[in-house]
Structure formats: C-alpha cells, structure tokens
Length: 209
Image 1 (tube, rainbow, N blue to C red):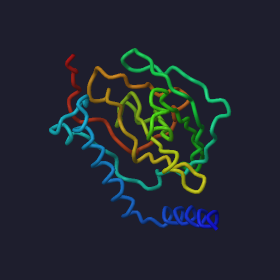
Image 2 (cartoon, rainbow, N blue to C red):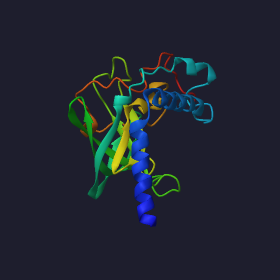
Image 3 (cartoon, helix red, strand yellow):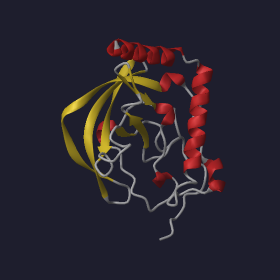
Image 4 (cartoon, rainbow, N blue to C red):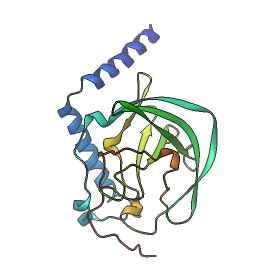
C-alpha cells in the first residue's frame, strides 16, 4: 500500500510540473530571483550591498529552458582539482552526467560535488553545474555561470531538473578577491543560452583586504 501511494505521489508531482502554467512558473522564478538578490545582504562576505542590487540583470523567463534531464551517476566518481579565477584550486567530485533535451537536440553537463561540504547535513544531495556558452563575454559574464541542483527535490519521475532560468554569476563577476571555480571544458556549450543572470551592470569592485 505504501509503495502504491508513493508511486501515486511521484506521478502526481510529475503531472503538477507538467500542468504548471507559464504564469505560475514565471511567478516561481520571480520569487526565486528576489530571494537570490536578498541573499547578498545576508552574507558578510558578499561583494554586493543593497544599493548594488539594482544592477543585477536577468534574461526574460523562458519555461522551455527548464530542462528535464536524464542522468547517470558515474560508476567511479573521480576527484578533480578545479582551478579558480584567483589562481587557487578547489577539489570537487565529478559525480553525474546529465543529458538534457534542448533546441531539437541534446546537450550534456557534468555535475560536481564540493568535497568540502558534500558530507555536511543539507548538502549531500547538492550538485554544482558550472558552464560556459556563446553568450559569455557578450551579454553574460565572460567567466561562465553556475546552476545548483538538489538531486532530491529536483528529481521528478526519474528526471533531474536543470533550470537554466536559475543560472547565476560567480562572485568574481562583481568583484575581485574571490575563489570562483572555472567551468571545466567538458561543460563548455557551443550554443547560445539566453537564460538566467546576465552581465552585471554595475562597476566591478576591488575587494578590501
């Protein structure tokens, strides 16, 4: 009985996702973006202050760029050193490969786990997806953008949701002095992804030491 109810619940969640109107989805993303901006004011290490938030810019919201991806957890996840724009390195576990339908084709992303936080409560299901695309250096930050995935909450009917409308900038876009991972070449996309955060419209800052 419990198994049957669980299947009904999963099926119901999938139907709700499919049935969500564009207006409902738009409101969801607008709320997400409001929270995203407010989070800068909660972190003492943040590169932005209240007066800077008006300079954060986004593409229009496109529900078609909320991708439902097949995924494969790698049989032998490997540890990799990911360079950062400060010259330091961060260690990540290369954990999963995502196959995502887009523009009448399929694009692929690798998802990584931060080895510093992957065993901490609340972080074990988190995947980090850094990427580059053809908008970099034009309408978006030249150093690429990031998307975060919660493999538990963003897993619908066996598909991982990769929402490109939630793509965001590394803090290095706003200021120097941060260790922002450089997207690995395997996540460099040869297409144009007009979704998520655009180039910051404010002045690039010099972080005080």
